[in-house]
Amino acid sequence: MRVSTFGNYQSALLDLMGAQVRSQEAQERVSTQKNATDLVGFGRGSESLTALKSAQSRIAGFIDAGKAAAGRLASQNLALNRVADGAGGAREAIAGALAAGRVDGLMLELQGQFQIALDGLNTRHQGRYLFAGGASSEAPVTPRTMAELSALADPDTGFVNDDLVQVSRLDEGTALETGFLADDVGGALFRVFHEIQRRHEATPIAGDMDDATRDFLTGMLSRLDAAREGVTNQAAQNGAVQNRVDNVLKAQKEQSDALEALVSERTDADLAQALTDLELSQVAMQASAQVINQLRQVSLLNFLT
Image 1 (cartoon, rainbow, N blue to C red):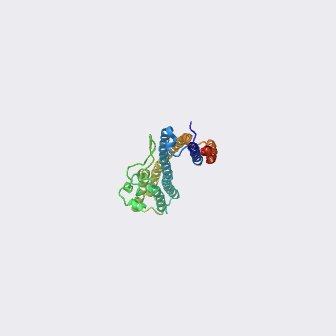
Image 2 (cartoon, rainbow, N blue to C red):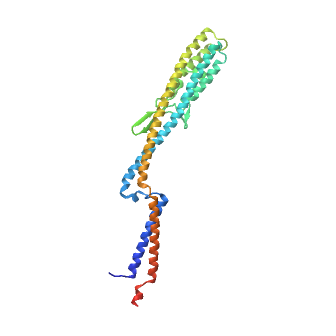
Image 3 (spheres, rainbow, N blue to C red):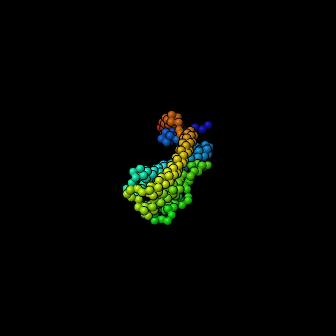
């Protein structure tokens, strides 16, 4: 076996370079807390890691869609309750007038309750009208007052929403109808307001209450009860969908956490081992450097002379 100064230098330099590489790898594991910074670094495990990452991305997309649906449903709940309040307020105003035997200010009060219901039906969420169906850029109810509503031959023509109900895809196998249409929610209520306003324009509802007005208003009470019940049922349906969405989101969050744990097992570095490897590589670097320094003072030429 030949022994040469060049060979000794080469061996020492290779040891130093190897120690530097190991030190850099250990330093990256300590700083990033990951075993590698790209898929190449994971070798044969990169295929399973790619599949896990793909599943994570898919679930994250469904979670975002579920959160968007949950926000929409929460806004719809407030809007539906507002429409129901308008129907309930109108009924209370008429019942109070019947009890007092006078209708002074009744039409003004009904106009206020109409406005409450109108605001509920024209509620917007993130810049879009909730109950407009696919035409969410335009208000689904056009009459702004009971007089404008009365001017329509058919009160149903005051609703300009289309028939496209909002559908939310919660996961690969679940798609729920999460929207409602303005004409379905407020159609019955607005027909009552339309009839009351038409009656007022034909025979003013003011002052003392006569028998004809009493009979007319009494008949409106049952219709307002039915309209309010219909809106309340839709609010209950909205609440049931909210619960379904919340349960799906909870399950997806648990699944996302489980996938995150699986990914962490494959990617997260053992910090204790990384620190140990870093210290050992630094010691090896120092030893290699000392050997090189000593080789500078030792040459076979000295022995040949």
